[in-house]
Amino acid sequence: MATSRYHQVTVVGAGLAGLVAARELVAAGLEVVVLEARERVGGRVWSHRLANGEVVELGGEWVSTSHTAVIDLARDLGLGLVDTGMDFTSRDPVGGPEIPVEEHDRLSKLLAERMSALGAAALERMTVEELLDSLDQAGPALTVLRSRLGGTAGASLDEIAAGEIGEEFGIGDHRSYVRVEGGNDRLAKQLARDLDVRFKKTVTSVHQSSEGVEVVARNDVYASRAVVVAVPLGVLKRMVFEPEPSEEMSATLDVLRMGVAAKVAVATEGEPVMFRRQDHDIPGWYWTGRADGGGVRRAITGFAGSKSGVATLVAEAAKRLARSSPETSLSGQPVMVDWSSDLYAGGCYSVIGPGQRPLLAVLSRPWGRIFLAGEHIEGSGTIEGAILSGESAARRLVAAGFSE
Image 1: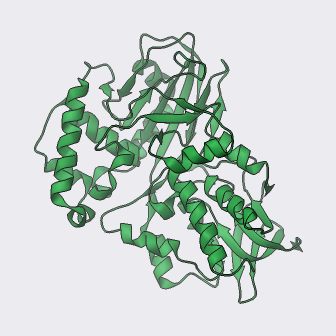
Image 2: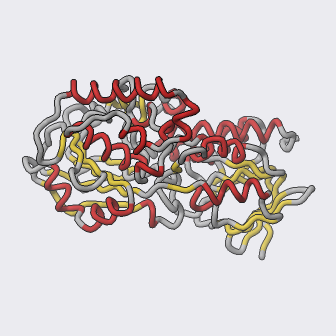
Image 3: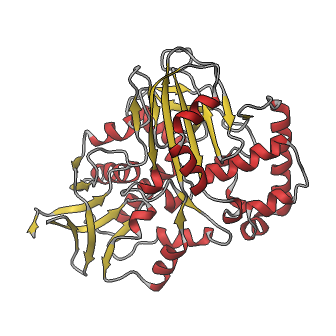
């Protein structure tokens, strides 16, 4: 194997967590190289232009107006933000009658009050299934809520800790949502412009000693003082580390896992109506949104979580999208991504089960000269979490003295 020239820091992964970490380290005066297995930056944030010119998100999409790290980064990079015009929480059943927004609000408020009454300690120990059962409610709004929560998490309700379904799941106060004009992955592309990013560099192992770290990527070895490993949890579990992780770290990686989800999108022949509709027999939903220049974007996007939901959506993408909006004419074939079968993702985002939230502290600790980044460090499954984790990893690395 050939040894590349020495870099002060190697960052593994050119998703937003890795790129943000690299940017912060470069700003601190360090020489940084970023290794990316794909032929593009962005990781699980991936924007796609349809044949009719509309841009859809096949990966991370929902940016709440409370996500200040994303908004600040976009503005710092000179990127515009567009109001999606969508409410993430209030959805109508596909093919069913509309549910009054007031009923969604009533149920969401009831759930938020129940969570407040139980307290954080109790919510950490119970599942979402148990929490919803404790409401003693029924009706179409609850059916939609159950499907929405499971689909959003990419897991069944008995696998998710009740304490995890706060703001990111649309529980509590309503939020408005924005996206980056021209596509969310412009964040990654803009970040990468000023960084040394090497593509098609699949990292298989990381070897550290008291003198430094060597990262093996195909037939190359990258030597550096320290490393930021910013890959999805599913990929992190497959990597080889020498010396092996501590028992605590190994146990944490064994327990934590990723959700299963897929996204599909299709162009429409004309401007569709604005809608957000929950599938009635799989944990999936479909929506439209505002276009960059105003009006409604000529596209429908769909998302499904859980193994059964993903299998159905992938097999019946065109049928499901058409059924979601019978008043709309579709144009061309849908594009889709099953993130659970993606080699460089291994899932959509991390799932935090009962009693698992404290394990995130293990991932955030420096592991010798190795620092981890990614949404799983924050346990949020969001673009916001990825950015915050990248900033945190860079700060921890500099504070550890490996930048000197």
